[in-house]
Image (cartoon, protein in one colour):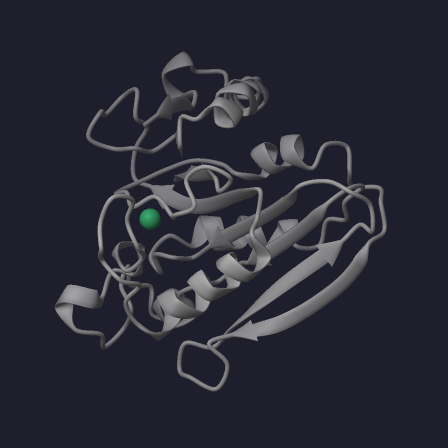
Length: 217
Ligand SMILES: [Zn+2]
């Protein structure tokens, strides 16, 4: 089982990428972004997204008190992909040396509990949370309570980077139909600088060439 990562520079994209499918690791990416930052202290806070609804799910934030980027990390958008949620749960305990870290580890909490990809009991057209966010060059509104709650948080916190963790069924280099073992990013200048470094770091520990992560659009 492996995971894939969607990374967006919100400076430019301003919208969550809509994408499909699968795969590998996240923690090392974040190790890059947060650097050797596991040594700082930082002020912690937490809250509830979609509070009082059946979608209610916690989020956590940490402020180093020092200038730097705001990183937002989401996991569990798809409930049948628990690896991303598990990684996010671990990362939320890390401290940082600069900037802010905001984590929503289990976005689709009911889906994770039921092991389903979708939002349980939602109509067919709206059941995939990953399709309920506004799209670039489209008038589609944010759909549903949970998507609206997450989108509101994103707009309020204005993260420099948004990293969305998923899990996949195969390795992209072995099975091009899968986006597993990949980083899907906004392909802007900032991502162009950081993604190759992320790939270098995470792939250093993967022995089999065909199982290494690749960059996808
Ligand atoms: Zn997914």
